[in-house]
Length: 332
Ligand SMILES: [Zn+2]
Image (cartoon, rainbow, N blue to C red):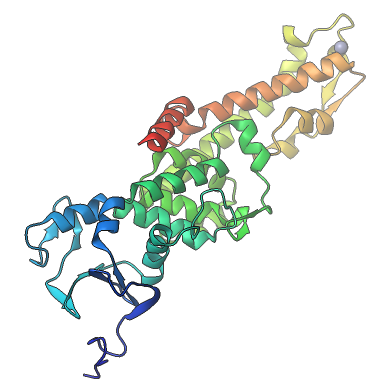
């Protein structure tokens, strides 16, 4: 075998990483492409999985780490230093995680230009190896882009706004996939909601690697949401005729008003389902400002009610419970 004499690895094997190779490091982490020579003590401070690993009486016995049976420690040395093979992890992805730990300012949770692949790698690997601080930061950063409050969500929900090195639209599915793998429940309803706003064809194109059960959750939630919005839009003419008490002015002007073209809002996306848009596009007749605003408000109230039900449509607890869980993650 063609062996690199200096490092003792096959020449086509993983190579020492340019930055994450500290000469005084005391453990080598091996991936498919890179070797990382780092310090056990720093890894142990940041990661309970590595801490548990290093506390084992005989690092190198080849057994899985207790409670983490997908992380094995092989009995190997690399230039006299214990080597741990991180099987199943890509070198580039591990590099993102280690740089976030060892390199000041490599990752900052307020920097939304951080590339999506870095964000996804940090979420997945900080979860797998329990790098608590990194995980907390990344969950908080993503949650700020997908807030649980309707008005905060809307303020950010511009499909073509730049986010994580691409447009926002391109982030929804990769983030949903990562949040599902990392089991970050607090992020899931908003991400499911964001992904439900695509056509069925587009959803199937973008969910090749999603499990059948998760895809079912997405499609069922999407259908329930669509049903809720449609049922309300269909009821609008009747509401007008019955003149809800909330929209009965002195002139009873809504009695002669009517809706047209409501079918253009059938199966509309949630973004277009607003009182302002519907009243502006579909309400005809001489309607006073007061009735106009009252009707707009009724539609927006219903919209907020449907938003409040979104977690349950995707089989999660209510927003306030999820917000509490998010606070607990940030405090942990
Ligand atoms: Zn009126």
